[in-house]
Image 1 (cartoon, rainbow, N blue to C red):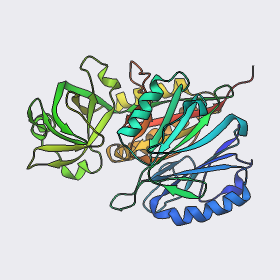
Image 2 (cartoon, helix red, strand yellow; image 1 turned 90 degrees about the vertical axis):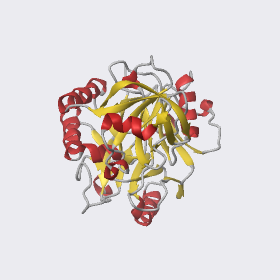
Image 3 (spheres, rainbow, N blue to C red; image 1 turned 60 degrees about the horizontal axis):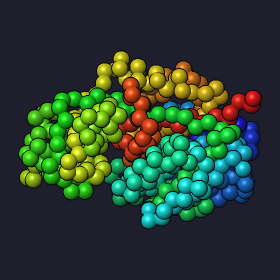
Image 4 (cartoon, helix red, strand yellow; image 1 turned 90 degrees about the horizontal axis):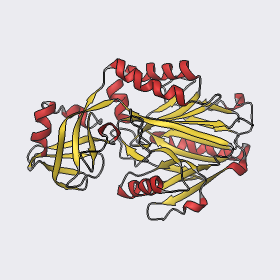
Length: 366
């Protein structure tokens, strides 16, 4: 399988005819991307072309993470055998027929909701679906654009795209890695509605959390600056619990708005950033997974960019140095995959504040 990351429309240097093209486009560049799509559709009529809106793009050619002066549309291209994959589009209301899918799935969603989490929980229990990696589409800060996915010339805001891959001929491996550790004792959610957390241990939620974190900096909450570990039972492995960032506070109510829905009788712990040494150690778990000659799709939370700043670029260099993959990806509003803690989880989870990496490679011929 050949693969390459293309940005700034450098398709003349591709060197092969792609059968799958995934585009990551800024919401402000929809018109430019659509024009590029028309050319690609004409030039590569047999290729499946899908896309996903981004709040910032990642590529291994120019530069690793885009700057404020440069906003390229990034394309992941490969020539996977046509009979070894399929693309499926589902609306938020659709049931997903697992029998239509291969065992391995890359999932791009234009929405984050309990519906998506229900699908992921079903995949975790499925005997047919073995691996799912992906992300929720991003949008640019301070714009009113809705996150979107793209397929067959149209943009969708309430749909999921599934790139389903035959496990007999291709491997799909990876991990969802966060850079936080759970701190303190489990705290019981005693009052919550949808994404709003009103009471913890029968006390105002904001008071309880600020007792641990200090006063929350409201400049950071809009950029996913304060994550909480959330799970249903206290005796589960806490490092496997998905993260849900605080995105708003209401000081009059003493409430917190989180990235995802939360429920009474769930439990939370505050997330504390790992040291740089521990971050690198956790990143190192990826290297043992990587097959030879693999390509990587990178799904990074928009909060990763805010929390890591320059370190995100350095970590991408570190990945490139250790496993020499071609990679493409974007900053997302939620990441999908199994947790990669000391005790890996088999559950497919919707995360926040994670780096999710999906490694794709052709299987060695026996």
